[in-house]
Amino acid sequence: MNEELLKEIKGTLPWLVAAAVAVGAYYGVKNHLAARRVAASEAVVESVSVEELEDAVAKFKGAKSGGVLRLKLAKAYFDQRRYQEAFDAYSALEGDAPDAFADIPAVGKAQCLEAMGKYAEALAAYDAYVESAPSNSYLLLDAKLGSARSLSLAGSKDKALERLEALKAESKDDEISLSRIDSAIDLVKRYEKREEVSLFDAANAAAAQLESEAAKIEEPAAEAADEPDKAE
Image 1 (cartoon, rainbow, N blue to C red):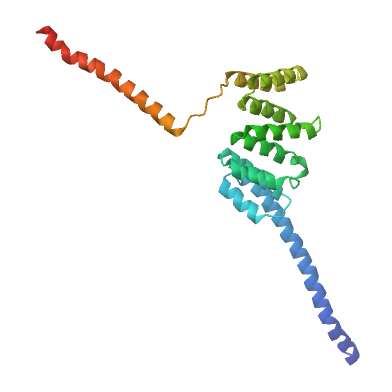
Image 2 (cartoon, helix red, strand yellow):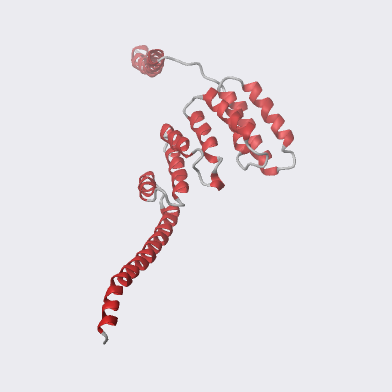
């Protein structure tokens, strides 16, 4: 072989090797990302418990399915009554949730506030969403019902019922919505706000009730003990 040609080939080989490595790396990364997307999508379906979802969120941070996993985690916290953690999770998702679920964090936060007994804050959060949401939002009814519940729980039962009756009139052609509104009306009507009682007062009341119950048990026993004397 011509020495000059051989020299040329030898000079070209490093570039060919580098190009091959680059191409291989490209396809390797592409395949890795594809596998990661598949794994993230599988995690969305398969992860159920808080622990599984926490692991999946950490593992697939930045993946397209990551936002859905974070939403599932927020709901899992809520379902376990870990309301503050759910609230924080929804807060972190505001402006960062997948487009199809962009409204969920706002309503989720309001539900957490309601569950934590922060009714005035929940009412404000629900109403803010109702004001800003488009008229065809799939969460609009949830927010309006939540607003009425919070209003009732805050002590304005009559105003809550007025809102629900007005909402019922607006939804007269929607059987599913009417059913949900009727359930909310029934719930609000049955709700009676309890007066706040200190732990000491509650303990004293419980003790008095126990004494009363004990007295009721002792009376028949005392009467039974007196019966032989009467017979004599």
